[in-house]
Image 1 (cartoon, rainbow, N blue to C red):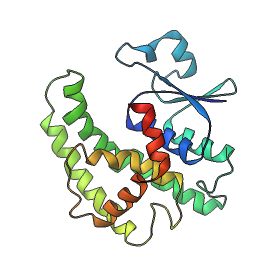
Image 2: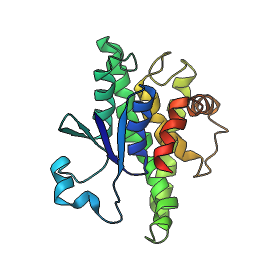
Image 3: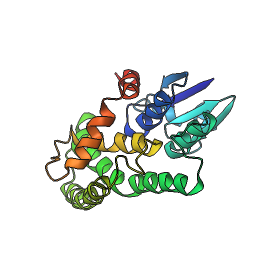
Image 4: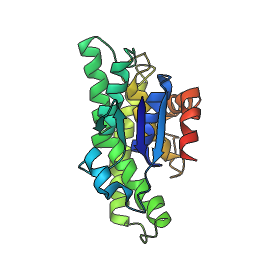
Length: 206
């Protein structure tokens, strides 16, 4: 049985989007970060880093959203993670790109402009916002160009990279970021947003 320990955040949404796309049965347990449930002795035995998401499977624990997404596709023998080694590496490279580049900056903007106020942590740091806006724009242009060449993030076939990337890019809506310069990215985002897996996954975060 699969069990996810998570919170309403993009890193957690990635793994649930993938689980739902794979039609996996799972339990979802909300971890209250405000109450520091992620810092308890019990939780730290599952993840010594003290972060969510965490996957529990047959008494074993796995953390880091990318590793969890790959594992879920692997145990399902799903084409969402290609068997061809080069095609799999292409999926990996785009997951790394979103983790370390575009996703990183979109997360920074979301934290500064939305989460800070929600959590009562004060005003947004404008220096951080300006830096994040600059690099987000540069990297969105890269994604836009790549999506002019193919239907999905890594190839013409849907992969876990698309569900992984979508969890970052969907933040652009509450951030009121324009897609005017990124029509291919908007078309891709809209298609992923209409998948049944996304709608089912969102029920965990209401």
